[in-house]
Image (cartoon, rainbow, N blue to C red):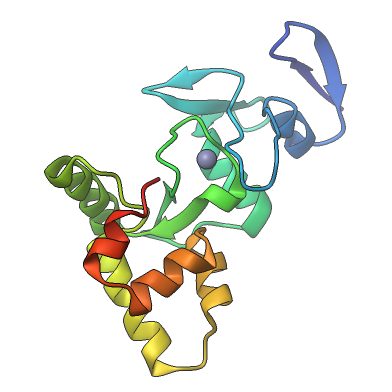
Length: 164
Ligand SMILES: [Zn+2]
């Protein structure tokens, strides 16, 4: 049993770390943001492992509990731009340049895109090579099929409407 304190301040016992983790999340609809209710740092949710004596980002743990270990060198990124959100459907893997690219793009245009230019190019290339459906790509990048379709076929001004 794991002893924990709920965000409401009540002592509670859990069978698993995972169970204790999800109790700190405001779980909503599949497509909605799921805000972290407990400790934060720099705007991101933080989770303290009592059994491992270290802290981890809540959104990274959400990804791990849902998908398994994060491959080396990759980051867990938000597609919804909400740092507190831990909905696995709003999280995707990217490398450091994706992370930087998304930030730079947002600053330059002052218009949040769901996907960076580079990511959109990779999606287009991957799809054009064949063997993968738009739905599979949408799942992989944590966005809707419409967004993927716009990446592949859309004109630039269509993409501009695709705000977060
Ligand atoms: Zn979200």
